[in-house]
Length: 87
Image (cartoon, rainbow, N blue to C red):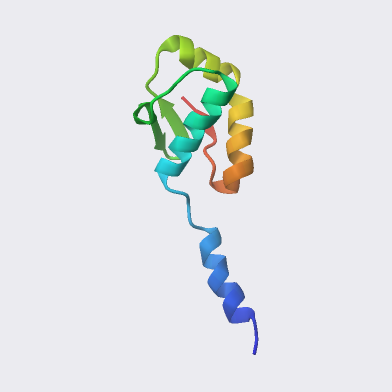
């Protein structure tokens, strides 16, 4: 019995993108750990691989200062399906 069929079947799951809710929840968790500010999940949206924030400017500036760290953390968890920008 060949494992080619199984390999082809499992390849399909590599292309599945994580639901926006999972990315939003993880983003909120990362930000609360790094920045210390509390963000509501409803204030975070994912639009075409970009995280869009609806938070006060002070908190947004703190997030932008650590943008690279936050995006690297998301990339390490979600791989190529991770968001690539924060706005």
